[in-house]
Length: 108
Length: 113
Image (tube, rainbow over all chains, first blue to last red; front, side, top):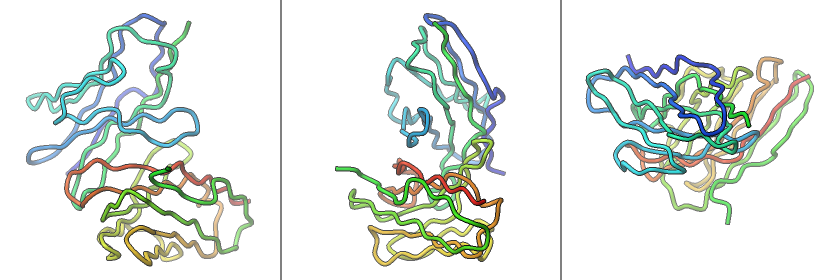
């Protein structure tokens, strides 16, 4: 079965603290994984996709096939990082299979 | 220069009514989608079209009928609205069906009262 799990519904950190949003997936074959971010009442925006290996807004994510994980990390959280973060897997027909989402709250 | 645009952004309507949400993309993409975000913020695909042809229909009630007049447009018509249809509906598009980045519209907030 193709599935994405984000175990934390809410993650609250202080400004300047490191952040790690967890994502685990289930997929037979070579997965294509994404992180999307949704700021309050706005559209989902692509943050990262694993094949590009870029760092966007200081966020990075490494695909670990052994642990079937694609955790999102940032060394120093900023208040403007507060948003909803979705991990997603590209499934059949190009559809995205989303995790449940993690709400990140960065406190001053 | 909005890439994926959908209208209306907000819609409040009574149970039993019929409503439509329109979507247009100017990215030249072949594939368009409708996703539903429920009250718990969970996102799930409803439909996808590739070059006006239905590719994915994810066990959505028959009251929901997508229509794609051309590959730049994908509209969603909902008949006999129910309270449970209240959600945010996102239109999206991608270059092709296989493993490409999907670009989302701003969402349409539907409230059924």
